[in-house]
Amino acid sequence: MIQQEMLTYQQLDGELNRIERELRKSDVFIQRRRYKAASQECEETIAKLDARAAELKTQLAVAQQTVRQISEVIEEHSKEMDTLQDVDELNYMNKKLNEQFAELNNVEKEIKRILREGEEISKTFEETSAKLPRLVAGYNKYNDEFNKAAAEIKPRVNQIRAQQAELRKSIDDHIFDIYKKVADGGLYPVFVPLEEGTRCGGCRMEMPKAAVDAQFAGKPYMRCEHCGRIIFKND
Ligand SMILES: [Zn+2]
Image 1 (cartoon, rainbow, N blue to C red):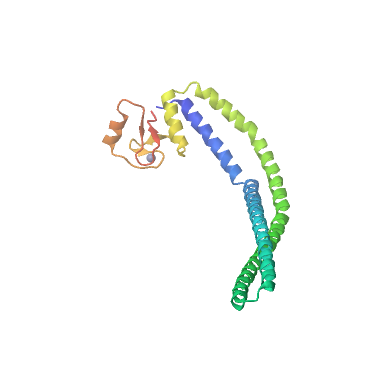
Image 2: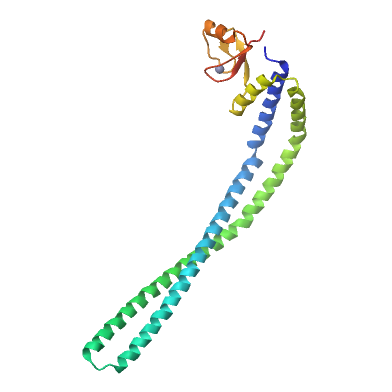
């Protein structure tokens, strides 16, 4: 036989589970979670866009600096060419100049690409930012309602917890440890009666009578090999 206090404690846990389940499946809870996830996603997108915009700004500064450097080189080469008479030298200088123009062309393409991506980012940024206030307002609304609902059940929850604390004083430590371990694993109820001498009161699994008797020898409970619950004799 398991102490009545332990069984009452378990029953109260059952009520707490029920209260929590009800709250979690309420529309308010679901909407609150949905709005929270959506606004978080929005904020993450904004942060990513910010980071990318900063990268682009750096890239643009580097590209503009490169344009200035190339322009200077082109200017120098052009001046040098004015002083040259020799055809070979002129050809050589011309080739070098063309290389610089090609490079300039590449950097200008790069600048266009950066500016284009910048425009896209700023568009996405505006769209995303415009959505955020509505999502935050939605979250706040459902969060308020959720807090109200939580406040309504709080007195009963506190009452149950106080009752459990009182019961705990009379519950055997060993039995309570077993209960906690199994309950924390997500099983409820933990303690179930042995039915008709051979059946688990939790999962209804039939066991050989001899095995049950052997398990109960010297202790008031046994573990169901099938569902992991603790079976006690109801006598
Ligand atoms: Zn079982």
